[in-house]
Amino acid sequence: MGIALGSGYQAYFASLSSSAQQSEIARMKAANIAWVRMDADWNDIQNPEDGVFDFAVPNATAAVLLAAGMNLDILLYESPTWARLAAGAAPLNSPWPTPDPSLYAKYCAAAAKNFSAMGVHTFELWNEPNLDTGYAPLPKLGTPSGWGYLSPLGFADLAVAAYPAIKAADPEAFVLGGTLANHDEYGYGGATRGASWAQITAGSTTAQISCTTANPADLYMLVADADGLLPPGTHITAVVEGVGYTVGPPAWQTTFTTSIAAVSSSSPVTVHVSFGYAPELFLTQTYARAAGQPMWDALAIHPYTQSYLPASQPVKEGGFTVIPALRNIMAANGESAKPMWITEIGAATGKASAVWPATAAAGTSLAVTSPNATTDDVHYLFVALDPTNNEPLVPTGSFVWDATAGGGWTVLPPTGLVLSTPLTSGTAIISLTVAATKAPLTIQPGTLVKVTVVPGDSSGVTSVVKTTTTNTTAITTSTTTETTIPVSSVTPTADYPAGTNGSVIQASIGQTFGTAIAAGAHLIVYVYPPGVAQDGAVSETSQADIITQTFTAIETGVPADASTGVIGAGPWSYVQAVFVYCWSDAGGTAGPFGLTRADGTSKPALAALTAAAG
Image 1 (cartoon, one colour):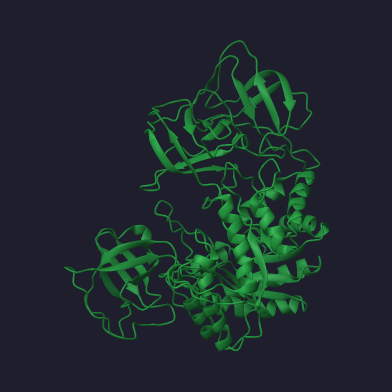
Image 2: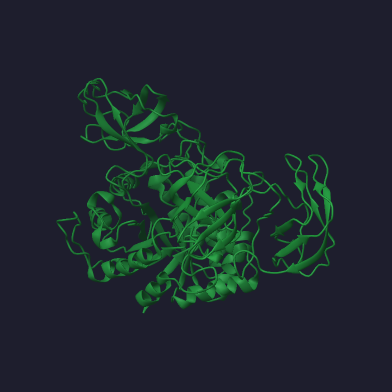
């Protein structure tokens, strides 16, 4: 049993002091966790100018974990933009830039050589390639993610190239591949729309689909209709907003192989636009592309079930219900002797219900009522979304200034204060230097200024300071020059989260939210550790139940349930390992480790893991 750190939590862990890292490891050991899945991102490791690989950053984290007796699974993904094939390059003929398999293989070989010298021999190829379109799926982003588009063809090419390269660099290597995400009945995410089209003739390389709600953000996504007329894998190559799409056949076909009947505009069909392939389809086509060439020693999967429990998840929601189907695909391709590893499972906690009772227009603070509030939330970032359209209700960077357990939060707008130089714990500080800001900020006499910093001392140990201004006159910062704020006392203390360290500067200096914030209930509220944001999804109790049922399902099986559509299966003796994803836990009641609260007290999930391991 292990945990998957995730890039956000891994960065947070790496920033901690040595003692804080050992505290986090102690929490892992308390749950009998023996394995850690960690990233070694290609994009951050290889220099584009000279091609040199520098593993210093992941090596530092790996060394700490290995010294503590952990076993490691190294995740190998995130291609640099310069390492991608040009759009339309053979043999994929894809409109998207795809990672170059030969360059990926060299990176994987370098990683295997580096980590095997440290005693690590387990490596994982890519992450959730069936969801990796290379483009951010959210409407307001719409920019390349930097990873590169992967169809089953592209991923098979990467795995076929990387597998022998890793084995050559480390003959003891155990390679995980696939790393498939779960899905709903169409794919993953996206939107439901109405569409129509003229007959699509067999042999066509493109087709036109009319859709009055077509959105530019749909570009490069997959499209499927509820009646199954379009072949799975049909993808959008061009969008005219409010008019429709140009679509192409699945990546493994050069044309639409059969004619597709017309759909009348007077009776449009429902189509689902999504950014991911169903894992069964993706795995089937990956094997077909590989044509018998080895790609992995075990198939890795991510059968998330939230917000359902594993034993009550409808078939159409994917997750655990697809494990037997994926196993059958492995067997059909001669790999029944290979195990399956679950390298991510679990659920994030932390979504809270909340309300602010009065409209705030250009306010300097916001009083939010929530039964989920705890005092651990102080200095965490505060995010509130409109449940009707998922739009943010407070500016990015708003944070919790004060909290009453079970009562609510006092939320302040984002600070404009920027500390220009690092500080060290114990330094005799007589002034703070404020860098130039976007607009002049007046700091009133006696204003309390809280500053959280990561100092750049020679030992690399982080610390936190609190400062209080005691000047007798107002100080106005400049947009062009730095301003020095005299202070009379400095008390070094751990400030974010409780007992650890942080890297966010926060100040109460009379900033305003800037726009009116309507009163009313807001059901989507997250409290994030600064810089380590993840969406909350379930309660702590549900998280614990999901973990417990995950292990129960593997060991004893999931019973069939006609009322919910759950298929009966198991026990799954071929599942060899389970890694619980280390959500950075967006919750007022949870610390960034995701299994214990910020004050170190146990959450139900920790007990569930301990029981499962026992």
